[in-house]
Image 1 (tube, rainbow, N blue to C red):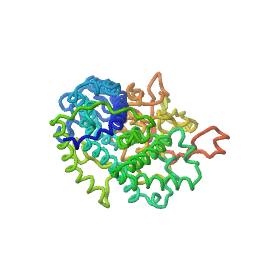
Image 2: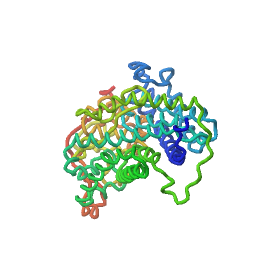
Image 3: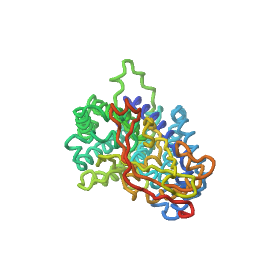
Image 4: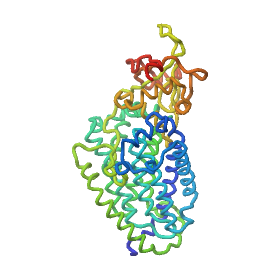
Length: 475
């Protein structure tokens, strides 16, 4: 079945596979470092309790067979090791079936983590990684030419990702239609980065150009992905440039990097590189592999009914999976843009009684805004899951319902695993006697304020979020 082979895209496949291995590596590191505090047996939302509520059919995961923190750690660190091995080229050194097995193990293991991750793994880039990881199983290695059908499925994934994001913006906040959303977004996005302050203070006409450029990248360019070359490369290049702009202006975990990696599979690298390396000698793909590729393509086409229906619906969902294996999902982001940044600030005191003169010490997080003088850090592509959920908690207490009180309990106990998620512990010797949370509005300082104070943020107290509580009351 020679028509299935796309020999000219061997370099695009190489870039995609190596890039995907890097993202897998980061994702497994994030899981290994943070799971005990978030979803461990004594975490904020423990996996064992969750597994008692869901069936294997609704949330397929190897952890239905067995769960312990030690087992989860072994699985996550095995994912780190396997990702690193694939990044180093192991998948190209083994037979085709061995390469497929390596990619399949990565997919099964990460899907297993996502399906028990609950609210901490509810972000679109989790399903996106699962979907891209599934397609990578069938992309082959250097022993065969890239299968054209799998390359088309990657383009279909990229199309749904970008076009879905574009549609949800047009259907959502009016500021996307009047080109003013970027007046606010750089300041109110979940986790600003080192350059977000500078992006926020760009001239407003440039912000309008940013929004218009975003519409072109998400509503026009996706159709070019299915055009002949060089137009497909041009469409992919527009998306890559847009994603790089987002990477330098904020922290969105590996969403933007994975989008870049997907777009790289579309690029005809022979057009760009002055002296492209010759394609490696490839054998004809075995019949069983061609049959699998055709079967997977048919499956994705059938499962695409619901994502397409969602794209055409006036009640479009932003990020959703329609099957428990997360094979074909729907994507989108920032259908609504916050106009004011609201942050939950947690404080504690070791004083035995609360008075008007009580001294409160603030807990600082690794990524989210807290101390107005601290420069927003670069975090992405790493994902600080608690920091992201704290942003949602500021939007509404409903988002914090399953985990915020357990978080307060852990801080009142000086729980080591939980404190490792934070930038520091203001009570290193003994736990605080009381804990409280307050709601602040945050604004980027102006150029004049920054020169005068050195601060990146200006904040005002809005309200009490959690009144002073002690451990005995919450236990």
